[in-house]
Length: 338
Image 1 (cartoon, one colour):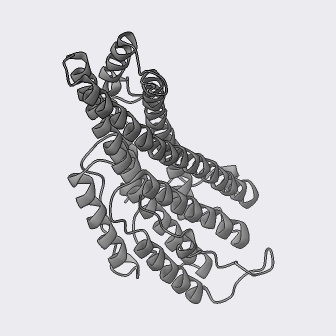
Image 2 (cartoon, rainbow, N blue to C red):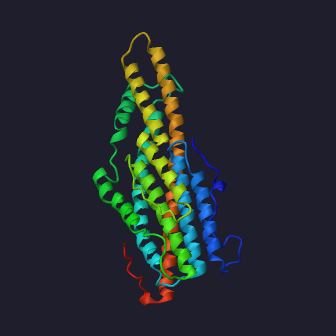
Image 3 (cartoon, one colour):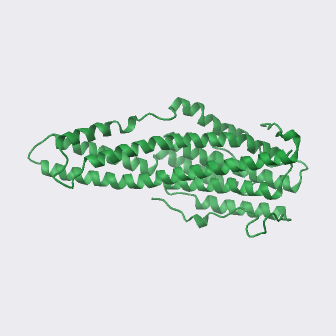
């Protein structure tokens, strides 16, 4: 299983170690430090394979990124007229919807996990081995392994989740132009970076869970120092998604097929049935081991997405507070997608 030391994912916050509510002065330095930290994190997130544990790590990275935006807004208290805040506010609703779609697919996978655990219980070799009736029940249950209904059908996925992620991508804009304050420039660049990371990582999680071989790709302007690292990781992940399924899911599916074949062999009784039952016993043990790994990865991803949902919701409330305090009739400026 792919694992990365979370400590390698650099914290972005310009307020780390500073007194609460203290305002930094050198915004160019803060922006540069943020870019450097982002580059290090992107390099640390380059996986040798596509796994649930990597998807969890990617979601944790997104959660940290959104938490940093919330911290930045809370400390700098930007003007309610800042366009980047309006854009982030609009996108936050779409991100929450994407989280819900991921929850839906995770729940479907959890149902498949329950089914496997039921089968493992039926195929208990602790005594004389499973009775023929239990073998039939186990075989029938595994036959429905891939047929559990999805929360989102392929058509609905393409209509809803795909559209949501593409909408966020279209609304990214670019680097800030014209005469704007240092505070607005810093916030704009950070909101853009977090938006780009959201399109990429949330897209990878959603698309890979639903078994799609492609996801939304974006081109980052070269004026962002982290553009090269982002493009490199985007290309790497795109190739891995096209080449294979999520490792833990693929492992369980392979062992489900092996158990099915072993049950069928045992059902065809002959003088070698003792050997066939032994092969079935080994196959069930391997399925149990693969399921435990799958289960741990799935639970980690669920917890990560839940954390991201709560963080984005908190950041959204933080921005709404800016509008309540900052005026503009308590309403955000309408975000214009260019």
